[in-house]
View 1 (cartoon, helix red, strand yellow):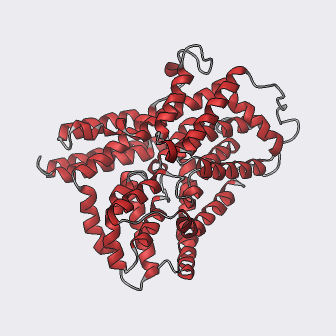
View 2: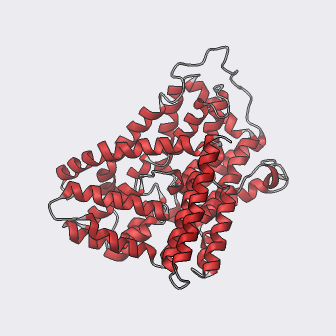
Length: 458
């Protein structure tokens, strides 16, 4: 037995023993501690993949049902969310991009600009991710478009599946279209939810320009660190001409043209959702239905059985179940009520307040996932603002710092989809997330503090 397998069994045994101990020491009417320990064990298993994601999700469902922790409609509410259907549709669309060869066609055209240089490929993918952030107001649709291209580009450049080059390009596409784009108010679901809640609760209307200016320093740090971490991730020198595959000059097939037209139309709808009001999830689901349609030529007839792994979608539903039940029993409010006084927020202690609010927001976003965190954090912004003697919108800006800083990939559903589409491991992406988080703490927050002082946000 390997050391990792031994460690996995030890962690699993410790989690089960801890779960049993809490149940033994609490009565049936003490639902909150039981929900807390079930949620903690589920997140532990999701974060480490000690058990298959579907098994963890099913066990989570069974535990909450057995406890009577919440009504079934709360426990299974993840199936009714747009996030689930975006992820479900994304897996299908990603498979169609790969199966039809469209990903390879786009990759060969990118290859014409990057050649066999890994560094040029990283730069181009980073810029592509940022550009899509301006066009498409949801990260999962951007991942759907960019990830298959990154995987095909890695193959075109001669990087084998699982190699550092392939993993590096995949992580570049995943992180560049998510983390630095938090500088754009409309680019990510958590910021949209956060400012919608602020408008409802406090009457604060969102300002695209003010938000961009306030978030700019920390996201410039993220972008620079992303390049610093990923440019040397694989070989920095171009592959030899002998190792490089021949460049394809074949024209696009009719199936590839149809899929490209579908994706272009979907991007148009995603980018203008504020005008027509159609959810990005339903746009993606429509494209997925067309891809699955018999005779479309975009996917094989048995693709749902043989080509598409729905484990990531059930993983997301499991995370949503934990989040929904935690909110239902009031565990999130209890944590907030007990932790906020411990933050020691005080007038004049702006740097301490910034670190405290950001750190608290990181914690909440890992308990509930990034899209759900604003539901907990936005109602607390008023109390935090009063304690810190800050405007409410300044507290909201600091909360976004925490929401946009994942320590573990499970916190951000788009990263779950990226791993599923590119088949790279959790540890590789976790190291990048942790590296970026350290950069945010050491460089990003002090820089933002100085910047906010200069422009008068405090």
